[in-house]
Length: 406
Image (cartoon, rainbow, N blue to C red; front, side, top):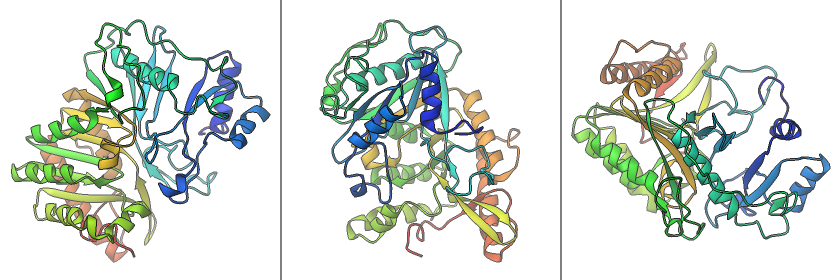
């Protein structure tokens, strides 16, 4: 962790030793290699519970699995149910490359780990209570809780939690909504939020997909995506319709995507999807880009885009764990926070664009700002080809060449 704080478990254990109730839901997938190549995680098994026992960890943990899919939510709650409770929702994995600052400078103390661009948002007020409600719902029904290694340290210490009994008071004027992707049958307790109505979670929830599609359909000026993946036919089709309305569409993805996307590029069943993506580039209002840092003359290092962010018309945005792909919308368990606040969304746009290409766009409206984004991205592609210094890190890409084996 940053600031020489040690590992994640060091940070959590220090909090637990101060008397704080620290609880963690870990994703458990014994066959993770079938979903994500060359990855490891902290699954429910003897080795990992022994690891916690051997270090005398005082945290409380449960493990949760969704067969064939991923428990992909990434959220934190702090002081749940207390005055000043806050929550964090986003896409950041707790690995070395992801825990880095804006611009992703190379850290000599961390000689390994690729730099990763990602976002989290801090939430206070009633929406924070909704994040707590989601945690309690999942904690109490975590799939492995009755298995031999599904609870740490034991069932009495890591007992069920009570649902929130009151909503945190408003702390500002921003409207925030928590949305989810949850498969049917994972959880069954439809306990309502304080003052709210019960939702039949046993039937599943797809509010993230619904909101994405509604937001794209409502766009009048600009659509900006930063996402690890653009791999959903209906989303790509909706972006094409937006371009037809004269909306500017800018999509930031990894220059080199995960190997599973490259493999899909070779599969005949995915041909139409990639053709649809390439067709977007026929419009001058479409920009497709990645990030690469110019570390030294003629040397560029890709920055992996792991963000899951969208902004519409400089007035609405969403941040969370959800990739724009079918399995994230209707398969993986996901969590997003969306907000309606023109001042806040505009400020975030200004901050991100300044990070990506080093210009202050606060004096520009969204269309002018993204026109400049496109201009710099195209210029940087030419500069990189010639081995010249780039302005910032955005580099335009040809979607027809994306995810092809090098």
